[in-house]
Image (cartoon, rainbow, N blue to C red):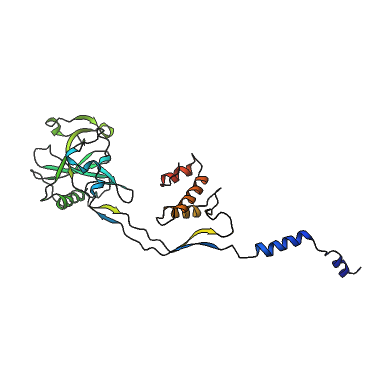
Length: 295
């Protein structure tokens, strides 16, 4: 038997192979049903945030000064803050710039010295820091320090020649010789027990640099996937639930937080993240801290 007869003998049709070829030709080699569908979002230009005077609706307890009552816990300074359009806790009142950094939450005065009025700021621990003096025998002058210059800049812009409303405010002050004349409300209190508690005068000057609109970040044009014809559930958000890679996870978070994302897509993303970040896991806690509403 020559080689050609052997080839003919062992090349009889095999049903299993034929079926695989048919499936390959009819199902797997066709492009029908394989295209991604969705919608196009055009390039979105950057819109800058809007800053201005804090709206009355954000003043909290300061909205009615006649009925204002300070928190009984003098460590609690939450009344001095309000959440702006970006979700950041921001001082309700105007504050001076601190050249060396720090957290000024409000401006106040200490009227206890016999000569002049000491102006300064209240920090996040409710400690009053005297910065400059107006009037008296030893008024502050420019050129003495960057801090005093910054304080005088604030004073000239917000107080000088204006009628300013003041509010009695209990805060911690460093002990000084005037405590013998003006008895403290409490002694050895505040951070590390190093301060005396006094009534100072809080200056109610509305914050003029409060973010009232967060604007819109720049976003490049992109195609948003809605479904894939013939590839299963059209509402399924693609991604490896078992182990999302950082790039995919970032895309999902960006899409979820984008204002223009449809509600059903946000829910699909949320469902995917819920399956990926198990209850009690570190990943779930991180997502919750980022504002993702996972229970």
